[in-house]
Length: 273
Image (cartoon, rainbow, N blue to C red; front, side, top):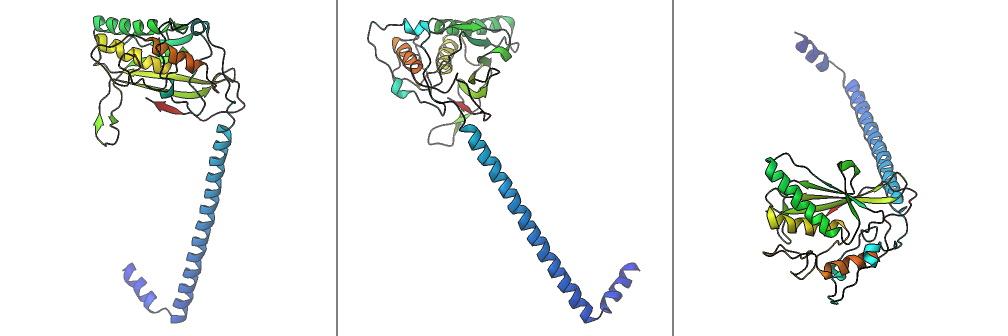
């Protein structure tokens, strides 16, 4: 009943009223469109301002300067003149990934996902690789991950696409880092190493040795299979070589923004290898 009455009312409305109604509707629609454009423009200005602020914050990172070599690297001498692969190490947006506060604190996860014997073997093997690198840089094992500079976790890394291909493939390990400002206002970084649970024995030792080299600052790979930082896994995994240590020493002689005081630096960056 109500709908029929409404229909009659509309049909009996004079044409002048209809034209007036249409005109008001068009004006109203134009007003809405103009208002929407104004709001959109205002939002664009706000978003642009935030983006500019982020760029300004990032640009406030400290200048690149070298740190004094730690005594362990100062004393290192390669009597074999084996050379290095420093040219393969990539600097980051803050220079080279150099540690300047020692000892470097390392947390090794005490996994509960496997039986007691496997858990003990995993921690023992990973700790052995860490101990091997401690000859060249001061390291300390900590009990809590919140206290660590480098955290090592027994976890499957995410799948990765092959270079020039969209095919996803599994990998045995992954190392990532992020930037932050420490409580004493120093630009700092921390690393996380993921080691696949499928890795055991000598393969686990080699993977840990390799990834830990990245975490200490060798952000690149060696082209020779005789080096621990060789770009691919080999059947007979090599120990830390003189070339590995020569490269590490050269890295620590380079300028960096890490470890220096900052004004404002709030942008967090995460990268992986």
